[in-house]
Length: 138
Image 1 (cartoon, helix red, strand yellow):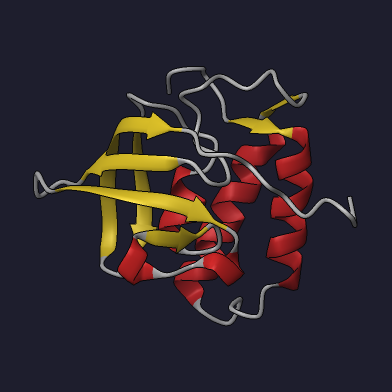
Image 2 (cartoon, rainbow, N blue to C red):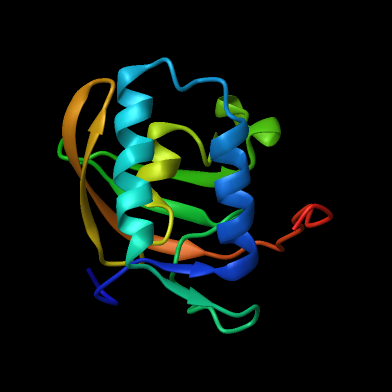
């Protein structure tokens, strides 16, 4: 792990926890396991103030380029659940892939349980898009 621990923006941390708590998909075992793993990792995460996040850390709206064990490269944007659209390569933060990637950085390798089984993902690129979070309830 590039930074030794997950790195999360404090506003995004609050939004992520709110998204997790309001999710209705917790009946699925893979999803529950992904949530549990991320929550465990968040216990030791470094929470950063706005504007102090490293540019290569995956967060809301990041565009992430990954390599899978099958040497396949793909790019996805990590978005809030209501903006998810797989045809546009926008995946929900609450999807197993979104949960796996959040807080990691370019160069990190992640072993995670997906619906297809346990896989290792290599993060080969991260670019940041404008972040517009609904922080009214934060």
